[in-house]
Structure formats: structure tokens, C-alpha cells
Image: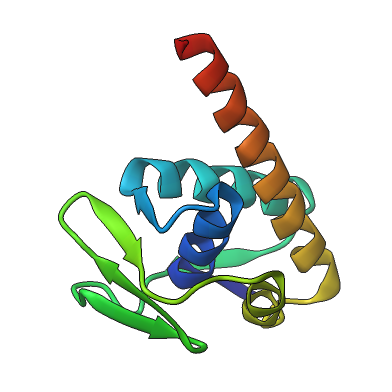
Length: 116
């Protein structure tokens, strides 16, 4: 059984968007896509947020702050850093994380186009 870490979802969602801030709604969208991919591939997991209630989070040298309605990134993200964060999971799960980022970004771009 794997642990679906909230920190991994936050970091990957921020990296996918390429922005230093992201609403909780957007993080939830990414988390739902990733959870669906893991379920479809029969990967057993439980959801955990060990830092619930904390506002200043550091996970594997990536720091972000939980504000009232968004997360603010304090550490610049690179592909190398995100890959290191994702390395807590096996290769199949890492591949699905990348696919989830791509799907999230594609959906986000489609939403932005429709709103214009």
C-alpha cells in the first residue's frame, strides 16, 4: 500500500502550471486526476496529509506556504527537483504522475481557451 502524499500533489501541480502560486481548487483537480490514474492502474494507496494544520511546509527541500485560499511556492522548481520528489514512488507511479501533470495542464489550457 502506497501513501498519497499531499506534498507531492502540491509540488507537481505547481510544477505543471509553472507558477509560484496555486489555489486549493487547482491542487484538488490535479490530485483527482492522479488518484484516478493510480486507481485505473490498480495501485493501492491511502491519502495522507501529515502536515495538516501547518502553514509553512518543507518537503524534500521544497518549501511552500499554505495561505487562506492558495499555496505559495518559496523554492524554485526544476525538473530535477520534481523528479527527486517523485522518486519516493516506483517507476510506474512516477510515469503516472507525469501523465497526470500533462492531463491536468491540457485540461487547464482548454478551460482557459473556453473562457476567452
